[in-house]
Length: 90
Image 1: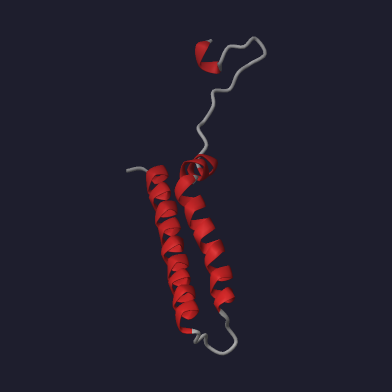
Image 2 (image 1 turned 90 degrees about the vertical axis):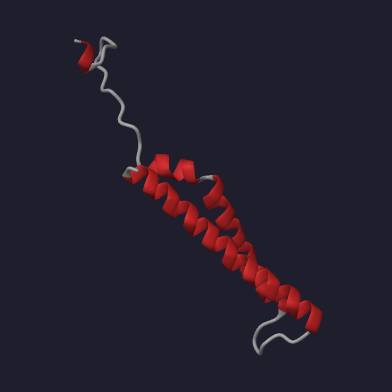
């Protein structure tokens, strides 16, 4: 595995962690809706509003990890000259 592959795995693990964290907020939201016992200063809606960004970011990181990796590790392009030939073709 090279650095590009490791970076892709790290991005996907962070995305999975965000989904798990968001899912825990969704479960708390469902529990509060069923029991009506939100802690002081929090309501059931607060748990839902907190869960949505975590889930969105997590799914985004899982689905677009390849784009993020390509942005971080762009492929080296061959330098072309005015004649259209690369330096290696001369």
